[in-house]
Length: 192
View 1 (cartoon, rainbow, N blue to C red):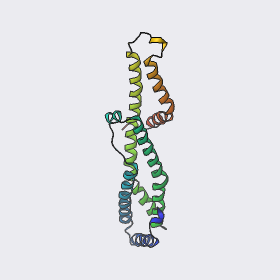
View 2 (view 1 turned 180 degrees about the vertical axis):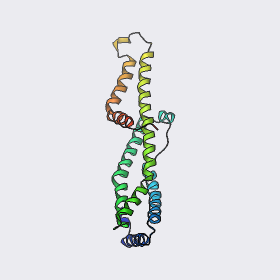
View 3 (view 1 turned 90 degrees about the vertical axis):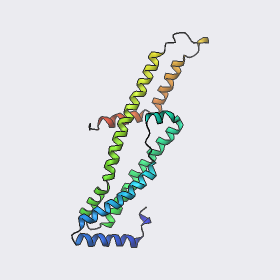
View 4 (view 1 turned 60 degrees about the horizontal axis):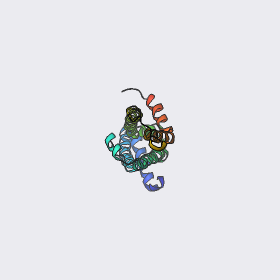
């Protein structure tokens, strides 16, 4: 992505930043830089992440395969943002403000104020996810408790509640790290 910025444009940006900082307009310079780059980064993140607000009802309507696909997409996009977009933005900031490390740091921090709202949104989402996981377990418990069919299964087959429970347990085993990570993370989030 850094190669997408022509060298002459990079030189002009650096010269403008240098001129503004040397004439006492460093605050204005890093505020404008941060604002412009934050807008670009927000657009890229939305485009990359394709975030869609889903309610519990929406999630219940989505097929399991579609939901798994959606989750995988979010995870991949998040990794791209953390491993490529943010480090690239840091390098770009360092190049534009080369020789002015304090201004570069202030500019990059200003850029990451998007990141603060993303972190807050992530915390809220993780809390909701933890709540949904607990609700799923409670639902399983209720289904087992409410199973009033005490009669034996014809021809010695497997009772439907056992099949249902085993399905849940298999899914839990397949996705075990996810609930563990969510609960560990949520436990570390201070209450608002």
